Amino acid sequence: MITFPENFLWGTATAAYQVEGAWNEDGRGPSIWDTFSHTPGLVTNGDTGDVACDHYHRLEEDLDTLAALGVRAYRFSVSWPRVQPGGSGPVNRPGLDFYSRLVDGLLARDIAPVATLYHWDLPQELEDAGGWPNRDTAERFAEYARLMGDALGDRVHTWITLNEPWCSAYLGYASGVHAPARTEPAAALAALHHLNLGHGLAVQALRTTAASSAQMSVTLNLHHVRGVSERDADAVRRADALANRAFLGPMLEGAYPRDLIADTASVTDWSFVRDGDEAAACRSLDVLGVNYYNPTLVRQWDGSSRRETADGHQDGTASPWIACEDVEFVRQPGPYTEMGWNIDESGLTELLLRLHRDHPGLPLVITENGAAFADVVDADGRIRDERRIDYLRRHLTAVTEAIAAGADVRGYFVWSLMDNFEWAHGYAKRFGIVRVDRDTMRRTWKDSAHWYREVVATGKLPS
Image 1 (cartoon, rainbow, N blue to C red):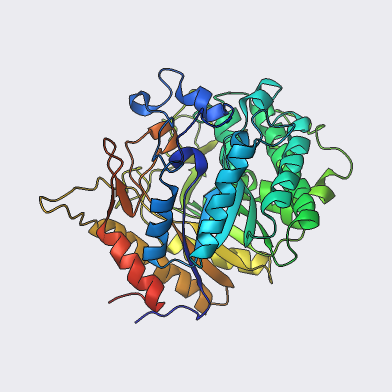
Image 2: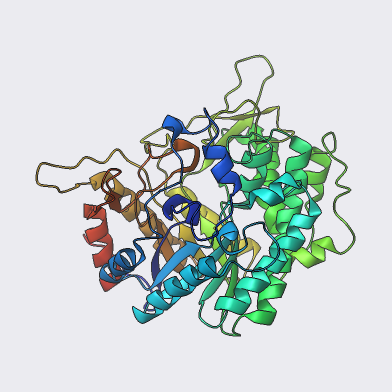
């Protein structure tokens, strides 16, 4: 039987816009995802996060679900426009009170609060002023971090500055399949830099306001990039620079990779990077959050055949892969999840070992891992999601293999606690281990939730 370390941190995760609802209540301002989801044609079935899972009004019920699962930590995100409606200025007290109740409710149930400051819901007012391509947004983000540190810093176990800045920069500003739906490659690279800078400034602000025991982190959706053959080494390098080293470089080493700057020279001269910025982005972290769902397969395009673009990030009018016109993203063999992502847990082991090798001494936590499937409710009300259980078992096994090989992996958060608003896919994709009925908001445990509860309770994978 596979056993995890004694103090392994078991958790589950959600994000504010995906679960909270109450989009215009108690002083909350609009975010870029409110604007995006209310724009016809951008989200499947015209879905919005207006109600989502109604978590804002069902907080106690959901806290009790977490307690019943037995998890030791809960990763949630703070809605920036709920606590600071325009992205600057005074705090919105009712919004802040909601998160204070959330944190206190977790602590009362002996669950560690893991707070993500930014999970993509930028206040619309800041986007109107230029968004993440505008340097001022990084400064505003640091002020917001300081505000949250002052308010909750005595109670939060771990602070995560950003969730998947890759998506914020490239899907939001290059391919346009995420909010704010812009297709401006140069702006996307400026956004990338200001996200990195904002991260560093936020860590600095939190270090001065949060408890000294609080851990500092960031969550990256690092791509485990493979080539079809040895001839594709340069395609791997180019994709890896954009996907991984564009963030790992400044955040952990204090410098952008030179090859990334050379690769994108036709798009921008990187003049938005000022003296001292890279050092400011590089702040000591206590743990690195890793989100993983599947690997990425690339090859050098021959320039004549139909170019494959199966990167798993939705097809838009433009590509998120800036200056990678000669790189193909190849569809991988199945099996697949409902997102069309292939299931290959070996990529997780290899990714964790790469991080262990390249950044020795930095603890790692899996902050998201899970799968969407077309769950069926049986006549008896049971949801037998065996494929999700198999996915989780495979990936948790991969984590133990990385640990056995030396990687310092200290925790795992299943994505997601419950079915929710899956961004541009609306409610068409279900990632939750708890089902949410869209008509009644009733929560129903899937078999995967019962399975995960046993894993958490025993620290072992059931046979």
